[in-house]
Length: 180
Image 1: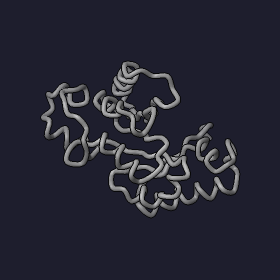
Image 2: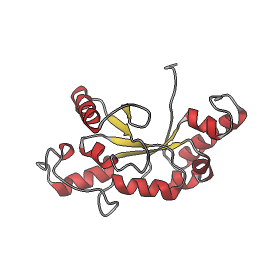
Image 3: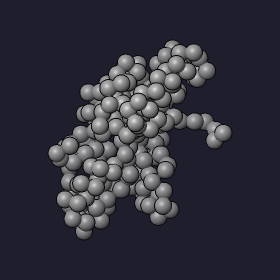
Image 4: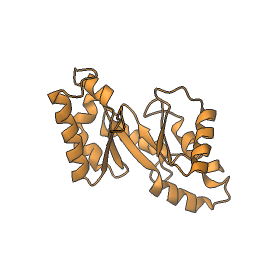
């Protein structure tokens, strides 16, 4: 997969849509990180064909649930339904598209705030959450040591995220600076 970063990157909805289309052509799953977890653009990224989203700056289970509602169609959410690129402009039967999208759209929540750490167990137990994904820069900043990913507090928080993900049978992820 690749992550199209709408939080820190400089992408318009059009450039995200064209990048998603390029990913499809290359056989790469595109995930999009919106400017904020509660962005009104998330549904449009999915309409363009994104395989999922990375929700930044999650502070609580309630916030995650609110963001997830925008990603899921009824009865799981409130995402608007139309004839869009993701459903081949309604040539895929809409009921089948809704069921497939609700099942397959990947939802990753970023663990990078104190609120997310405080509600880590609840986030891990949220049925629609697939991945607990650490944003190391913001997490280190939230822990009072900006950029220090070697601190004891950071390493302990990382271990908690991995443990909760494992317990809940979810994936854990983290941004890395180098391949190795």
